[in-house]
Length: 248
Image (cartoon, rainbow, N blue to C red; front, side, top):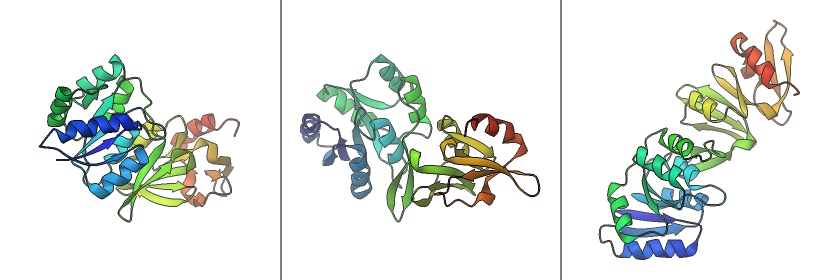
């Protein structure tokens, strides 16, 4: 079993590598000091298991795990953590693999044996139960065989596109394999649903206009490339849109 080690602290990575060297069933294939490098190495090395620190600058372990799930062959994940009892209870309740820091040999061996792939929705549930941040700071798209991280702050809107969702953002468009419903729940603080097939970033709205036939239309700020015709507000959502856009 190929194992990738991810931790922002070098002594922690060295400790895990030493422990893995004593486990004949597992083969250390690489290490990363942050979430971005973990995603790149995982796509390249295709590890069976990732030992993943939770508290890291930039992409933390929970968000990194979410994006690892977007790989064509997602690895099993074992979290390494110094978190409190809320996290431990959440991991136990959801059967998510973890080892407490400082990592002990016996516990690591047990966690590696129990490592399993995370079902959709598990990470959000664990994060919520553990009082961690639930909403991601990026969404992940697969493009030309690679993972592309799109900062949520760069996104203008999400639009349902058959079985996928189109993400319109500062640097273009990408398709992601997520449901509009789950995105609406996760990013409800920053996005508003304007009709059944679109969510729009509140901060990116310039104004609401009336069309010649009396419909209400969202107009995004001038640097957006989204076709305004896609952004007609349905009657069902108009009151909520106006409430969220007060002051815009």
